[in-house]
Image 1 (cartoon, helix red, strand yellow):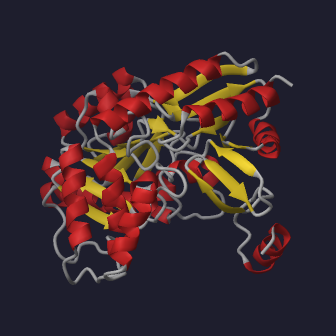
Image 2 (cartoon, rainbow, N blue to C red):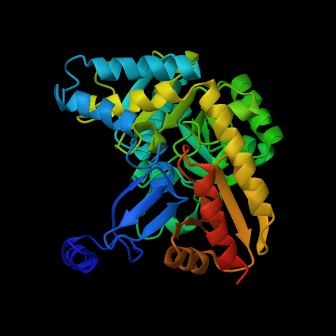
Length: 388
């Protein structure tokens, strides 16, 4: 189908939940995509930090195809080799003890929140069930995770929300007041992606980790967007020198297939038991085969290269007229501009560059495998748009 045929079908039958850009992609290779008319684009968005190896990665595709040739789905009533192998890889890479698999970041966060409440219930009874999150956070679109999201604009229309949840500024005194001996957990994103790609202050994160440890409040790190090598570390919390109690992952984990994971560290490894939580499609063997390929390739050398690419991009971006600030960590980049970011994103699209927005900033989260040539081509387009 050509673009207009696709667009007409979507507008007639699709839910009106997305404000789409006028393009449909038909293929590509690494960080270069091709639309239905044959036009090429440099991809600085990676499907919102999902396609960590870009488009059409042969090794990843072969891993997925090999599993498709065996069996496409196995119920969680039974064991599955790809799921067990992925759990091992994630635990060995992160220091976690166990893993639960779901289908999205929101589901992974739901699992973490339920785990926190059960942990506290079993130790302290019903008095400690509050979950504290941060202002400007984003944790998902389900009612539980939407309640934890610290942005009022996402809360319109959907009340009443889940009780005993509150959002506070990233200040240790504010967290302590909100927790007030009634909190079972605090959830943070080390890099707040959806609200502007802002990295949390390191001293705050360390103070928070110490407070949680001292008061037996679980620390949850939402690494849905910042994890899986995005910042040059396997998980972004590693930059802060802390060890959380629960970590959630998604987006880049599947390399393009839907998956979420909740990782349990020492304090939480035995909280959930049979029947406490579940998922029909969570841990699907085809998706897990792809995720095993992703996690298995994120070795020290690969992450070192990601960190180097991030430094190159950041240095070049700072030199562009119209860029007022470069935020975030690693290859999770926010740009404060002197022009409206949505206008810039549309102009970049016209010129053949895909970028994202995050509130008042431009967001750049390219494939981790992006080449220097692709980076330079994308930077040239962005420079042309901003300096016009």
